[in-house]
Image (tube, helix red, strand yellow):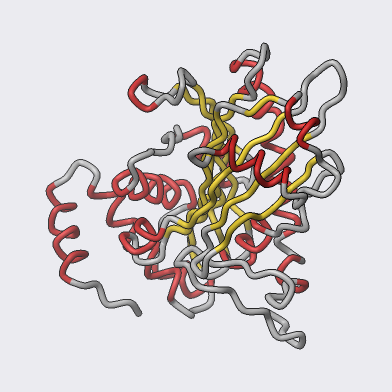
Length: 306
């Protein structure tokens, strides 16, 4: 069982005096459940916390440590999550946090009956969510899971193609601050992305995509989001997906948020289903996925029945 250091002990003392003490005490219970090898039946006898309470606690702690808080959920939404249904939230960003005038973010939540590492492999599987319309090129990657990607999507006429360059990275700070309770894989537009994209295409690294074709495309002004996973216990994961996007041109931002909301259910359902199988086919010799602490994930043994 995990032994809390002085920092966590001081937070326990603070929680006793805080209006949010119940949520934070629940968080400590979640941490213990995540490392306790006892069967679920035995754990059920040790605690009376329900899924809604655990999720509420998880969001409290995330928002306490993150500069970009997640929307809190009301009792009806928490009950829906407890029934293993998706919850979708459309959020207006404060003006100080908006990017180039963008004001909306969509967030999806789902409790998945799988260990967190399996859900993580499913969400980040580069071979899972491909599209014939999408051209992707990894430009950089380091040994902690940070990478730089050029992406171009071909759209039907008369809509112009879109392209962008994003930097993806694990949030190692929030992982350390929450003692591995939170795994976060986020992305945002890279600085100088338009020129980086032109150079990549001009070098011939983008396959059949030409500089001429790129000139007629629109570089998106906003693409920011994250996969966030919380380990509720050894067999259950709170899966969160958040995104803010603006595809530029004459398409209103509100339409993009509406479209993203409509896609959330399908995305969360697909990841939930893929989590049952993704870990079986993961092979770090073909591609490496890094966990929320920045460590390369190993392949499961072929004869594993876990």
